[in-house]
Amino acid sequence: MGFAMRIDTGPLAGAFRDMTASYKAFWFLSLVDAVERRVLRTRTDFHVSFEEMGRGILDLAFWPAVTYRLSFGPSDQIHRRLESQRDDRGNQRRPRLGFDLKEERSSGILRHVPQRFLMPWVGDYPDVRATTEKDRPIIAAAAIEFETPGRIPYRILPTGIEIDRLWFEEIADSLLIMRALGERELIRFLQSRNPTVPGIPDKISAPGRSGLADQKKFWLEMSDEKPPLCFYRATRLEGSAFSLDHFVPWSFVAHDRIWNLVPMERSLNSKKGVRLPDLDLVDRMGQTHLGLVRKAKTFERKDVDKILGEYEADLRIDLQGLEDADFLSAHREAVAPLMALAKRSGFTGKWL
Image (cartoon, rainbow, N blue to C red):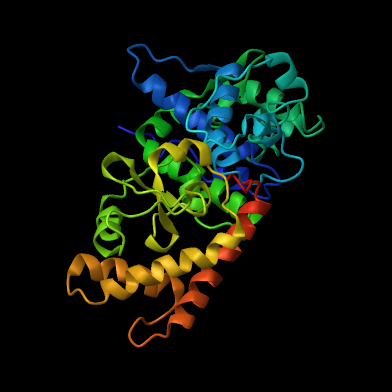
């Protein structure tokens, strides 16, 4: 049984209003994760240490900040905390970062957010209006906690936070909804800071990849070279040596569309990582895809038509009667700007 009628969740919207940094979204998502972990325990513990909350924030922020290289804004401490973890290999594993609680509370990622997140609930509490913004939520939360259960989500202690029992039950009963709320606010914030970057909703958590079996089958069938040649080294790709590479890194485009794929030696994947190829290769890539399309148009199969549809939808073209020069132009106009945007987002280039 939930307690939706016994607490007021309305102020949650106010907690995310006018976000100038990422703290509140990550703080709330870390809180939801903390509740979920405690739901699985036999004995419920409403206390969450600042270290647990802080590490939860860094774990959540790792993917958008490091793997996907999204901007959080110039003054965001969470982003600054994680920038040193970037590399060009793909960042598929989150490191165990050092955590100095005293520093994080005094000047780091936990300096303001525990208090400021509570402001919609305690900002007008009568006994604390004269106190400072920093102290007001702490004093009010302590006073309200036993006076009115369910009045605020948590109270702030020297060692962490103590979640209100009714709020704990509400979050536990609505984990998916609560997490979706936090993710929605995070996506809105990231979109405002990265207006030219594609696929923001897919870049707030660990990559979910479905494999490239259909694309690989298409390439093997449609390539004039049997077996295909490595796009970068022109070596024959036989058996397990064959791999498909995201020309513009998947970490930036967040999709597996056929027009951004090229065949590659599997052993080169770790070397290329998430680096950008040379811009001079874009025209040769277009010629390679033009050859695939010419042959694929002679087939009448649903699986082939589906992939041809990706060219038409994404490149904004009609393949029926399309001139070769128009295809090459459309392909370049799709790929080259993505490379420029990826470079501006911190992806490096010229790996060969």
